Image (cartoon, rainbow, N blue to C red):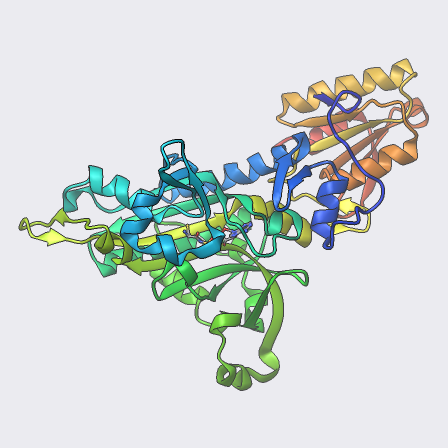
Length: 440
Ligand code: 5CA
């Protein structure tokens, strides 16, 4: 149990002037982040808990998809980027650094070169493939306009995976695998992401999909068939035993494209079925074939010892951006409404009378019992008004709130409130434990 009286939770009552969109405002107000400099943030305890939960779900889903976790450094040598030809092309977005020996280094904006180098140093034979490797690591991009808090940061946390296959057909299978993995990941995070045809930009290749969460404050302009509003990943069997190609076909069967890829003629055809909206790009997957493997001279031996240049793809998820995206998708006037899967704590206990022994004992007992059945509890034991306690608990958005006060306790009850529906019930301690036990 974490006691709020001792917790580092610097909440703010008023909307901070520097924030334009609701997720940024709420992250600052709920004491989740602090700006260090433009587009660069420190994560405070509450924010870090959410970031770790998002990371955990992303990791679990990569692992079940068969991707293997590694950890590459943030700082890379410019040499590799000269080999791929991207060192000059990447332009001002790349943060370039000189070390004490005047060697050119850089803070990685992405890792295609580094992973290709690892591959070429270690793998020799077609028998070693397929491989999908991933890491979750901080990136730096010196964005022209860092804004909206963690949504468009300069330093941000990304999950990036890289696939290696011996031919195009198998590379497409890896792409499909990651595609399905993304549908599962975003659904688990409580989000509805629509895969849309997208521009490949500096990563390259000619096949890519962005995964977009519809939101008015999103930075991407998107166009799609309204049918996607009825697509429900939770209602489908998104497992790897199923035919992945079929799942991908279904999820790409209707028209959906980002600004750079949209086709006016198709949109005219769709008529009133067209949705022209804004969205947040939470993931982006790419197939780029031999772009890096060829430029960096990677070959492996095929079945007849013939040289094969591996086919590659890369697959990104904006882990830190997701924290903002989830808030954009789930909040109300009073604050954040966390989906259960990423909430920093699963329930909050509000003690309305901290100088009443019975209230204190009830809260502490309740916390212990809840923790025994797997809950993470934030206990508001501060010397504050009830109004302030309600406001802070609504602001930080935990799924369950339990309000303990002397009046209810006289009748042996406390109040249980569900943050998303606002539903309130007076229940005995036993019924609360029963109701919040994992089996329910
Ligand atoms: N190497 C490829 C895939 S691993 C890559 O870098 N793709 S990306 O550029 O599309 O980035 C992957 C994801 O990172 C994006 O979909 C987005 O969710 C997130 N992202 C990109 N730029 C930023 C940024 N400035 N701030 C926060 N998140 C970002």
